[in-house]
Image (cartoon, rainbow, N blue to C red; front, side, top):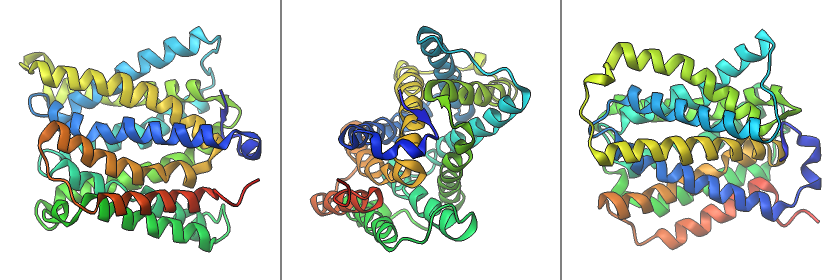
Length: 304
């Protein structure tokens, strides 16, 4: 498996494979919006996140050991992984889970599709890690337009209502944007080890928070909420995080977060299938714009 942060190897990877993994990651995370909506019906947000990150941590540690990897031992590395777990999981998962108590999953998908925009702005104007690139800027803008088109204006009718919930979802997007930039410090570390360490860090924060704030042993969750939460832990966290940290090393931060556009469209599809939410007739146009945006961001067509 490619190592997180090995950006110098980007030209050596099989790009179609990485794009396929990007699509799979979008499916895993796009479906999470509908799953979260089901989970929080009878399980409070912090408890959902605690089970999600703790279950993901157990799965990832088992995979890492099965693959013969050892976990880090340095205190500074674990502190960095704790921050990674907060940025990548604990904070955005909690904000999204709480926000979806008040807004539809389709609108949440749109608001949470902005990480590529944040990454582009941060890397171009603040950290200056990458030169200002008009092609990538166009890809970011076109992809965002595609998100709006595929979701449709109907999903935006809730804009203006529940402003704190919408701010929470956008805050999750900003956290998602900072996370891959922070993760660059884990170059040379296997992706599954970074993912496991980050989930352990998130668990250290979220499990005590859920126990203290929500007393989950007093709950009577439905079977649907339990199933949704476990699916979030195994697929949308354990498997997804392994793919995410691999893609950081092959596509980079902006390329990896460009999958957020696909995630938004997929979240609407799951919302229609599982929650009976509306679907726009402009979906085909939106998906075409999203594909074009991702192609521009990742330089498809400009590589040998």
